[in-house]
Amino acid sequence: MNAPAVLGFATEQYHQYVINRPEYKAEYGHWQTLTLPAEFRVNAVHATLLRTGKVLIVAGSGNDEKHFAAGTFKSLLWDPANNTYKLVPTPADMFCGGHSSLPDGRLLVAGGTARYEKLAGAVKKAAGVMRVRNESPERARTFPKGTVFVAPNGREYASTAAVTVPAAVKTGSGKQTVVTAGEQHVFVEAVGEGADFVANSRTQYRIKGLTEADAHNLYGQSEKLTLDKQEYQGIRSAFEFNPDTELYEQVTDMAYARWYPTLTGLGDGRVVTVSGLDDTGEILNGNNNEVYDPKSKTWSKAPDRYFPTYPSLFLTAAGKLFYSGSNAGYGPAEKGRAPGVWDLSNNGFQPVPGLRDPALTETSSSVLLPPAQAQKVMVLGGGGVGESPLSTARTDIADLSAAEPVFTPGPDLPAGGTRYLNSVILPDDTVFTTGGSSGYRGRGGSDLLKAQVYHPGSNSFTTAAEPTVGRDYHSEALLLPDGRVAVLGSNPLFADKAETTPGGFEQRIEIYTPPYLFHGDRPQVGAAPETARLGGTVTVGTGRPDAVTTAKLIRPSSVTHVTDVEQRSVALDITGRSADGVALALPGNPNLLPPGWYMLFLTDAAGTPSVARWIKVTG
Image (cartoon, rainbow, N blue to C red):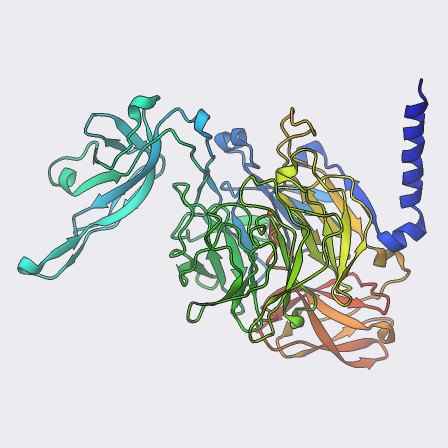
């Protein structure tokens, strides 16, 4: 009667024996699963490697509306070297915001959640966008959260956030005077429940409490207020996380609220911010991109360009931004999906054709292949728009060094059609890819317990050891300074294949140790400068200088929703060797090597890397 159970136990025991043999590890690598102490378990929606070697894991409300309602927002600092943990005070719901490392090593975090979505059947109060207008040129007016707008039929609707309406603009004089009303939108919700509050046509609303001239000059207008589905809404808040104090520090708000934005660092240290859902749940239309200046800690307008949410934008050596087509969720299928090179200086956009399965770029992964000097970006997998069950095994590569770049086919993903695949640059100039699911958010038990390594030199994949934890939506992976890879998060819709049990958030961390760490002694980095200048040369101590074959600076990852536009590996020329060190030359192009903190890796002929040494690159 017990034979099948005994057989299953024996099979598992043999599997554990095989994957723990030295020969197996040396060929395929090895996985370790960390279960954090209960008080430090957070829903890892965002993860960034800091220059201290610690990983900042941001949950915010963690896709849990109860936490949102309670104002329970979390961030965790994890030190992988010592396996220690620390909860960090989190001043706003950064859930589904964006982030980018700054030249001084701080992390810019912008946007997040102002309101959770409500599905049509769960909406009890009619709601929608109210355009608040000010016809007085005398001054702007601010209305607090809870301001009431009254319809002609007496129905009342309250604002869910404060709103500042600019003054009207007056031009001309005498009979030629033209007054253009100032306008700002705000989301409003009926004060009572039910269909009686639904308004399906354009209506003007008076603002309760205003009298005389104010009542005439200030009013609201809305196209419709309904019981339809209500989308997530974003916030304007922005913060810098200080790795020294290990605290968030508030900076100037963005001009526009954002939920699901992408932040991409530029060669001059500024950060361009695009896309996202605004504070009414509408996707930003592209005329509201912004640039953050870390010197003044302020925002300014960026060129107009529409993108779906969480677009993958990579800084090129020419100082332009390449949009690979990868994105993560919101926006119409027919708009903003085509890849291309965006020139911020003149707002030009050069399409990059040739991407196969162009309708399956949502939840795909993109990576700037190593070395960055090659200027090649790879798109891996992806799926259809929204809750589409479709996925693709396609990988395609765009060579951005060409005058007219096009995508060329890469090898198919070994696991077949894959969404939510994480891709991580390794110090041996390969790309480790792991996890994902063939279906939307792992539906139908479609998580893929597979991993593989892409080799740019041979344009091929090799098999890696298999992970034991499924990873799909809200998962991340990043390179650690010791050469291992940390994999976090996952937020499947269901916990079972039959889809009878709602899914929970995966809070275990897996660490993958690549084969190169089972190949014997690794190079050592001795004395090294803490800073290096673009175009300069640094001397790095090492016990076996003749064994060092490559050196590179790898930018630390900042990843969410498998979107990681930060990571890049920049090759350094070895210009000299001494008895106890090597001389390394840095490129002089800040668009190839943006100023900031990098991990310096030395590797030997077998591809075995040193433990990284942190170096700050300056202009």
